[in-house]
Length: 349
Image (cartoon, rainbow, N blue to C red; front, side):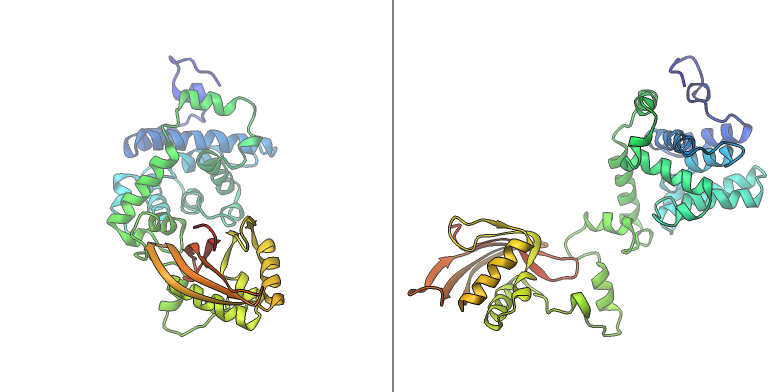
């Protein structure tokens, strides 16, 4: 690869040069923003590097022309034409690419490979099972977006490619395009896809359903079983109620379930515990001591899925006199809809 500015991009990057690849590059350049187009070209270069690293030979082990076409066209779903579609951007892009290839007389069996590579490029665990070109395309795209397998690239390759095709904050620009499309057409962002998860973070709290919301809305009346069977706090207020109930019942695991895995808990002044194991030990000690706790809500401030709670706590049974404190608690709503502690400090104030 050379960086001579007077050479064409095909020569500088040693791209496969055919009439189809030239048409593909020109089409993608006019259809998508420059930073998306450059990402698609970089994806091919990285995909080719992964192929070489795996000992795969172009023309023998994979179709290099198809790999190039699939990589360069894989984000057509984010083009103006793609935004007019009603499917998730990967599928709209695959359909647009297939139509482009049919107009140029490409065989249907080869079009099918490109369609799969584009439609499945965000589908981990599936693309890798759909053929060499499809797997390589996903690998190259994943490297350029998320740095997947970047450590296996030849030394200096990424720097050379980025010098020729600067990133221009690709990952965030790409995300913004997806969000803009989905805001205009919610059907392009199923709640169960990464697109849905991305959009959910840019909407008011509760406006976009989670997986557990979908289960609750299914109409079949399914109830939690197994690891999710324990009753959850549906509101910040209910966390304190369940806390008192579980402590009274000596249910250590119930108490632990009211904390995130990396939550912070202060059982006594100056003692700062972090994480499930430490919190479980503290809860066992409380239960073994015969402690009883009364919580009376002083104040709750809730913003979306975060709540600041303050209780008046009266702890008895652990000493000759009751221990009265004012708690400072930060709660967070979990994906299943239940509220739990992120920080629980009865002595912060």
